[in-house]
Length: 295
Image (cartoon, rainbow, N blue to C red; front, side, top):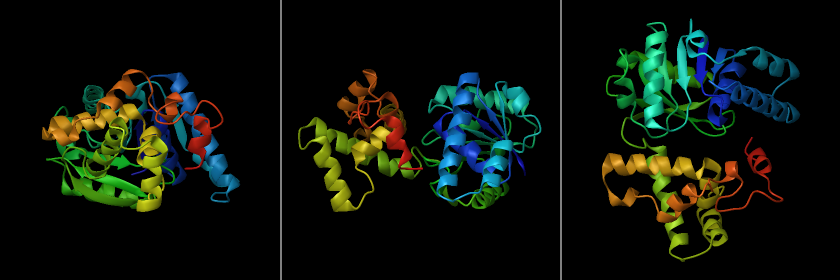
């Protein structure tokens, strides 16, 4: 298995493409927007330059990684002769279902279809295909080239052979794969999102301010960043989407998104990527400067 297609050139998609390419895979990076592809490739080059400056890779390895990536704006053309497709589109159920239905129609019959979804049911995604045994979750963490964990999510029909193969591929990417079953939020977000939501509720109810909440969790609980800063980094819109999946999936009020989170997303304050969330990134601490410390 050497030919991999990645659907979506955003933060997660270009990170996944970068990682596969760095480890010698032939990668097709696919997005309907040429502008998104250009930005994605620019991000890959920038991240490789950072790695080069830190002596984590050589100039030859940088050039080889870039040479391993080809971009496409047409899914059908981009997935020809691929062994594995990793979907990394926006965390939207309807969008992912449409993508997987199309992938099933245009991919070779033996191609494995993986989703980088952080919360949406793999069983539901697999249900729109004619190959549910070959559909699996491959949830990378952000930033992908740095973070070791990959959640491997088995849908109801995912075969043992496909699961074992994806676990093995993840190890070849120098990642640590952890197998989990298909329930809302899986493990990472089922545990993380209620914590972030509770921190937002504490702010909403006036228990403490943004700085105070984050400082307590960083210094008291040894978290590398506070929950409100982490929510900004993830994207408040993404946090809201995941909490809605958890709430819809379990029907438990403890997963209901905080009204403050809902209002902030409605107002377009989605965190680092918009320039403002719980913190203001528009002045001295630009979004790009914040992101650099994690790569």
